[in-house]
Length: 392
Image 1 (cartoon, rainbow, N blue to C red):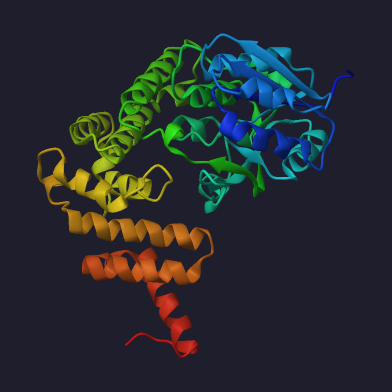
Image 2 (tube, rainbow, N blue to C red):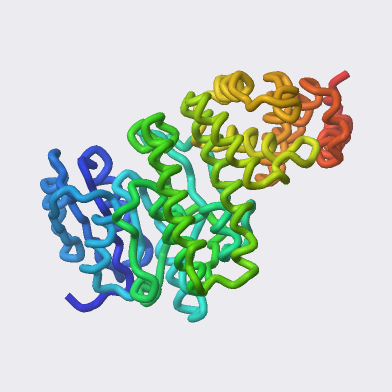
């Protein structure tokens, strides 16, 4: 076949339940100059039969003994013929405009090396649970961004092949966070990244892929510590980047604590929260302090199924000392609602933002000192009065 513009790489391991839908979502793209490379990573189900049921000549199938997700992606990338590489996990689905809108950016702006997008969180049956707009949280993606937070959900990406040739592919020694490691390496190499500020992917959430699962949290933390340690050991880091090391590790362990608490690993959460503060004392500063904002913000994410149980776990497993022990469950609930108010505000859901602000202040009257939260509440009150619905 002639070289296509885009190669879509689909790694698949026992993914028969979702794979057909993933392939169809690519075949239904408005942009049609692509190939699909399905890499079967040692599946024991009907993965091969599903691929072979399609007759489209643009679809290729590669089998390899089970070596893990990173290895399957890398096999597909090596076999790819396109100058742009798209990744699609076998349980996710592209929206029809996904490739067209991302290709348009790479074609029109040669300085851009990687394009990302927003996504919908969907359940096992494809029902939309919520919309995620990460570009509101981080409008610009650069090295500083990805050191503190990884916005590169693999299925959202379209990458120029030359950047993969330049920085290498996914680290096959990492069992988790291989995408974060890749984000750090490609950002450090100078790749410019751009958002398509639209929802172009369905990201499926099901039990098998929940990274808060108790057995995966320590694995993920070890992986993050490993690749971040390797990065900061590089002799070619500028002084300004080296100066970020303690803050980066403080944030890393704070994220690990949040995931541990979410998985019900209270003692692990306590240990990692202590580690976070030992690296970055600024996490204790603010009203509420930064560690509270971060943990309550984590409760807003798709990684937490039962936010009340999550907050109970935190309250029952906090480090000793006044800085932590004064944060009982009630105060954490109040700050959860505060975080929810700001999230709704960012999504322009003004009524929901007002209700969350009301719940926050009702749970802890001291939050009226938070000017941003108070502004959300008062703005909602004004709107309600104008519509004759003021709550008395």
